[in-house]
Image 1 (cartoon, helix red, strand yellow):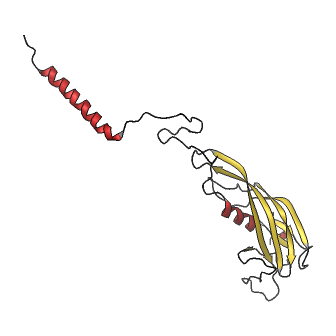
Image 2 (image 1 turned 90 degrees about the horizontal axis):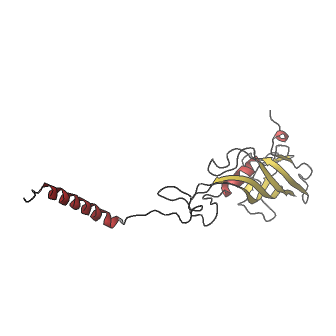
Image 3 (image 1 turned 180 degrees about the vertical axis):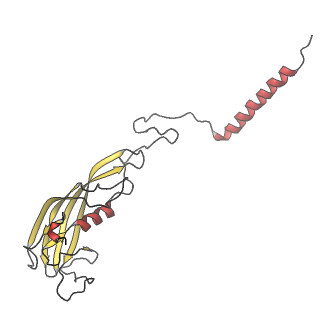
Length: 205
């Protein structure tokens, strides 16, 4: 049976658990869990995610506040250029204590002015470890850019030939106004028929 402390995302909080007013800092890298984004935009599983923050102990649990940085891979939605950049997010989460007699699905009351909208995550059964796997996944799944751009004014690709317009800003194609295309075709047909008719007329002696 797997032990909570064996998880790659486990953080020991035994020194502050059930001791209101205590704080335990966290400043470490954790492997990116699976399921963050996809091939277009996401965080590759196993890549280091840096977490800098602290667990603060209150009466009913631990409040975790942190700044998280992950290496996000993406593809510009206009020019399809591959992107690799750090993506930052600030998180606040609640890790409630589970007391004897508590229902497994019943959330502990949030106190100390914490908003009910905060995310809650369970501590290990003994209250000594907090696991950050689900928190890291949830944080970046919710904050990843939906339409990443290589730069705000990316010009994209030429719709006719696909050339990158950022690299060739003067690129253009000669186009015929569609309103005159039919007339041009009719003119060409009349000229051809006129030439054929002239060729068929008998020459005067």
